[in-house]
Image (cartoon, rainbow, N blue to C red; front, top):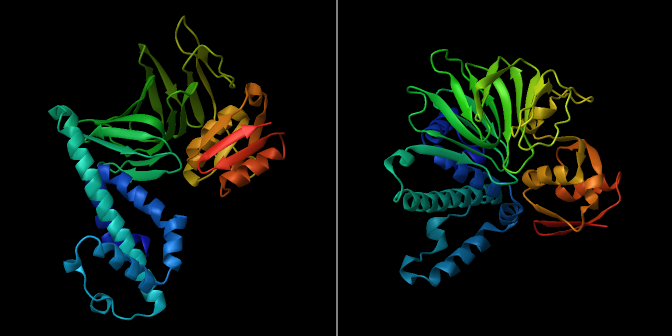
Length: 358
C-alpha cells in the first residue's frame, strides 16, 4: 500500500486503510518515513533512470552467488513492457522490497528490545523523526500531530480509553479533538500542558535554552514540574517561554516572574512574517524555516535538524554574528551562500559534515 501511495496508484479506500494501519501501529511511522525519504532520494531517482532490463540482470547476478536453484529466465517473470511502464513497475517493486525489509528489520529490533522490559513498558507507543525529516500522524481519538525533525512522541496504547496523555521530546504541532471529559495532556521535561480542544505548538528540544508553547486557538493550562501549584493560562496568539537556566529571556513580556533556582517564565505574542503574515512559530509545518535575530550557533542548531547535517565551528567568533530570514526550498549549500551575503565566513561541506571557518 505504501508503494501504491507513493506511485500515485492507491485508491481512496486503500489510503484510508493505510492510515488506519499506521494509527493502530504507530511504530510503523518510522519505517514509512524512511521509505518515503528513499523514494524521493537521488539514489532512487538514479535507479529509476537505469534501464529496467539491466537492473534486473544485476539482480540475477547477485542471486547467483546465493543459490542457482532460485534463478529463472527474466522473460518468465517480466514480459516486455513499454519503457514507461517498466520503469514504474521497477519503482513500485523497489519500494515494496524496501518496505518489507525495513518492516521485518524493525520488528526484529523491536521484539529484541522489548523482551527484557516490563509489561507496562510493552504497551507504550513511540513515533520519532530523525534530523532532516518530519512526519504527521493521527492519534486514536482523531487528534492530529505534526512532528518536527529530531523529535519523539510517545503514548500508551490504551490512549483515549480513560485518559489522553502523551510525552514529547522535540517539537510538535497539535490539533486536538475536543473532549471535555478527557483532557489532552502533554508532558515535557519542564512543563505539562492541559487542553480540551485547541491548536498549538510545543518546542522542547534537549540542550536548548528555552521551552516554548505557542497557542493558535482555544486555551491551554500550563503547570511547572518543579512548581505544580502555579499555573499559567494562555490565550490565543500568545506564547509561553520557559528558560532551562537562569539566562534572561528576551521577549516582550505580558507577565513574568522568577524565583530562586527556578526557570524564568515569560509570555509574549506570536510573531508574524511581514511578507505573508505567516506565523513564525508554526511555519515549519508549512516547510518554512524562519529565524529572527538569532546567533549563528542558534541558527546552526536549527539547520542541523532541518537539513540532517552536523555543523562545526572553528572558533567562538561566530557567536557575534546574527541573522534574520527564512529558508524554504533551499539546499544546505544555497542556504549557506545566502548567509554569506550578510556575514563574512567560509564553509566546507563533506557529506553531511559542514565546517564553518574564517
